[in-house]
Amino acid sequence: MVAFVMLCACGHSRQGLSFNPNEGREAELTMPDGEVVRYTAYEHLYYVKHVEDTAYQYLNVYVPEGATKTTPILLRTYIGGYMAAKARAPQAGDATGRALKEGYVVVIPGSRGRNSMQEGVYTGRAPNGLLDLKAAVRYLRLFDREMPGNAERIIIDGTSAGGAMAALVGATGNHPLYEPMLVAMGAAKESDDVYAAVCFCPITDLEHADMAYEWLFNGTSSRQRSAQLLPISNQLKEQFPTYINSLNLKDWNGNPVTADNYMDLLRKELIRSAQTAKNAGADISDSLGFSFSQEEMGGMPPINGGKKKGMAAMRPLQPQRGEYVVGLDMQRYLNYVANTQPLKTAPAFDTKGVLGQMASAENEVFGGTDGSSVNFTVYSAYKNGTDLPKEVVDNVYLMNPMNFIAPAEREGSKAKAKEEHTVAPHWYIRHGARDRDTGFPVALNLALKLNEAGFDVNFLFAWNRPHSGDYALDELFGWLKSIQ
Ligand code: DHB
Image: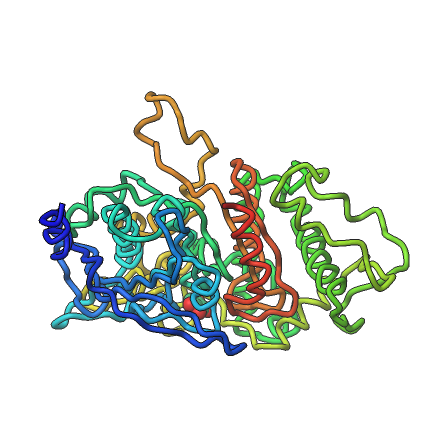
């Protein structure tokens, strides 16, 4: 027995990857309220056998006192702007510090991104950043027995491009399309599905984000005043109804969502946002476009008849200050949003070569290892006089979680084996009620599609939040507790 323990002291190697539970470093984090949280850090753990980029392809694990084999794991990516992200240490002010304090194991993976480069080669063009995160999940499963924390309870959390990545990891678990690339990287031969995805303001559904943006903001004074952008905006806006109708979405009550009622659905969701904030004590100015009443109007039926766990919990409480938010002038509200921060240009995402504009971050995401940038929508490629190579079309597909949200037949028959993959059962999706980095429909469509497919979704336009994440941590951690 003694000999066995001594053998284990040198750590564990499997499939060319290793983890040594004896190489932890004791550390502590002082929380904003002065509480000191002690933890053990295991850092610089390479999660692929064939490391291409030593600066990014590893993860750090932080284990608070008292963590066991059943403790959930918060996997927090710091990806922003689709750039490479370093594996960092936990931060007192965000979900990582809070998670440690609550006793969760925290894992912070590095990942390649559109700007990472090794000897002149861009290493992180799509879908490589996503592959890195999937490889990190596989590594956690490979050493699940040796490492504190339960790899079957991984919650991935990210904001913006990181929110998009969290949605992708959540939606594409074990999907065969990524397998050959993961094998080539020397990722662990393990599954890569996760238990929950926390997506703050996901910048996703990139090939439809331009049309959603213009459909939403076309009527704002800033678009209407721009003689240059307005024709582009008008054309993109016209493409959105066909897209929305093709999604066959349903609202929380199961009613069909179409281009004709979509603006009304957004109005209801923004009213729900405002009412929720008002009940918690927020003052909401009349000037934003809301109308108020002492009596509830018929416009807000109970969500899912109050039957469904996730969304039922999100119904606004009874007003505590005697006032219901009963209406919203959408044009006025959208002008307010565009006044808090100037809108993006048109197109908002696939800008390259349209009206002679420069490449956007997203044009680089899909560009080549030589650092090139490319168009990724049919519209902008046409405007730029180019076409969409098959490789770009394929990568755009791999980077859109909307393509992977199949109905929740996760234990499906063998006849469906080819399409079998595992979508995370639990989703927490937030988009700021004054976030203009992408249009409101992007996050809402993701949430509705998941809900319709039978997954547990907690969605809200977070009142008065700009493009940001890891806020309202009491609410987030309350939800995390409720899904354990
Ligand atoms: C991010 C923000 C954007 O507006 C965008 O287009 C892509 C990424 C971000 O903050 O990650």
